Each structure stands twice: as structure tokens, then as C-alpha cells.
Image (tube, rainbow, N blue to C red; front, top):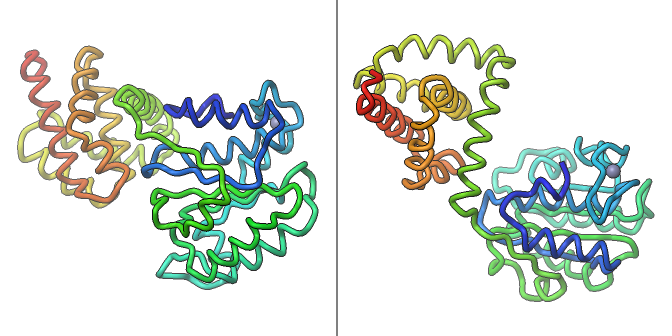
Length: 298
Ligand SMILES: [Zn+2]
């Protein structure tokens, strides 16, 4: 993976590549835009581009030890601040999921240490809109007088919630909502890949095989029962739908089901956010049934 693998964000990627190519990397950036469009992924790939031993025209090589460590989230100079990181750092579960001043204090200490291996120390602060007031103020001081060789990347879906003083210190990079074409290619990729991963992943493969037995004729009761069962496990639901699309639908009908899923916008809402998965599954399975009936395949 490198910045080449970022989907649907040409403008943001070109901007970042240009920063590297013109040796104009700033101390702080804000990546903003709706949820689930690759902001964090891009931040991590940008970090690789910045630290890579053998970059090509701004793109990371993806095989050097810097790239490998960043991919595994084990590079000491790339710190991804999210709720998991904060829990590990502060050692207590946090129901509110806000970024606290203690976390920012720790980051500050780290920022003033020289990088361990790389040219930069990179701090990726995910869900920056959850910064508590004191934490945001403390971060502001850091952004006002950033230590040498530090790059801060704040990620947020709600730019307006961040203090204006923080925003004004950062280079803003907008991430656009995915177009239907991008969503379709993501969906196709998911459908293609899940066949292999579900075969390898024995727990899911077994469960899916068991569930498939309940879907011989796509009758209404079977579909409703399956949807009830699948809504309990979102991953299983996703794997199952992808596998059924892949195994049962002929290629011509696959396109129609992709369009159906995307047109109803349910794919985005249900699989990426938390709404009623059961209803979505039922809808998709019914649609598949109709498509198969129309072609006399059932
Ligand atoms: Zn590399």
C-alpha cells in the first residue's frame, strides 16, 4: 500500500505528494471530511511517504523497514492517537471517548524528543473533534511553537467543532465523499476478496456454509430467518452477503445488485455506520431473489 492506493481522493493525494516533492512539508495538517472516506488511511500512507528509505516521486516503497513498521503500527516515530492508544496510555477504559489533556501532555513530551529512526516524528490524532477543551488548548501551544521535525495530522469529520485557533494553525485538506463509481469498486473488491478470506477464516467459513444450507430456494421465510440470524454479527452478515453475491449471482446480475445496494445508499449507511443491519440484509436478499426469478434462475 502507498498513497497510490488511496481511492477517490485525487486532490488531497496530489496536494500531499506536492508537499513532499517540493520539500514543503508543514508542521500541521487537518484532514477533514465525512466518515469512512480514507482520511486515516491517507495519513498513515503520507507518514510512510515521509519516512520511507526509498520513496519514488513522493510514493513510499512499502517494503523498507520504515514502511513495514508503519504498516504494523509499530514505528516509534509514528504515533496514532485514538481511543485504543489513549486506553493503553492511561490504562483505564474511557466511556466518554474524549481525548484528554494527559494524552496531549504525553504527546508533548514525545514531540520534544528527537525522532528514533526517521527524519520526522509524526502524530496522527484521530477524531480530533473529541479533544477536551484543556487538551485542545494544550495542543494549540504545541502547534504554535512546534518542535523541529514534527508533523501533526489531525483527522476529523467535524471541522467546525475544532477551536478556530487550532484550525488556523493547520493546513486544511478536504476529503470528498466517495462517488458512486468509487463505492462500486470498493464493493466489488469486498465481494471478490471475502471469498478467499472467508475460506481461510474457518470460523466464518463454517458459519457461512451452515447458513447457506438455509437458503436453497430463497423463500420469504428463509430470508427473514437468515436476516434475523445475520444481524447479530455484522462481519458475518457482510461476509455472507458478499459470498452469496459471488457464488449465486451470474455476472450480469451482480452489476444490478451493486447498483441496487448503492442506489439505496444502504450499503454506506448500514455497513459503515450502525443502523439496522437485519433490514438491509433482508432487502438485499429479496432483491437478489427477484433478479433470479426474473431471469428464471430460481
Ligand atoms: Zn519504504
